[in-house]
Image (cartoon, rainbow, N blue to C red; front, top):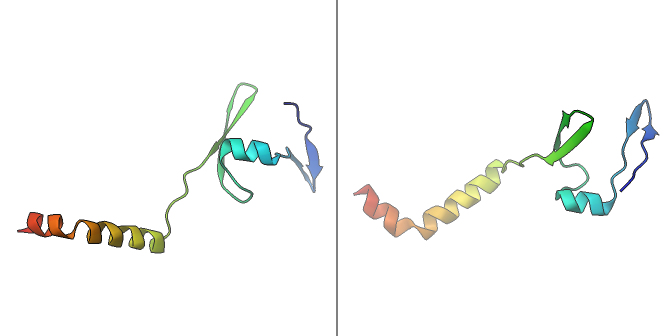
Length: 75
């Protein structure tokens, strides 16, 4: 697949089609890590961290689902 680098303001940009984003598993606004190997540019999605609310909800679910076992372990 060949793409053309375009000018965006004072920068250059490489437009990515929906198919390219889907292959990477990213959406507009997601963070990516870019590294270079010689003349190759490698783009990798960065891991999204859970918000405090998401973490609290997941923890609550785990505690609820395992309450009996956790109680026995605590004895």
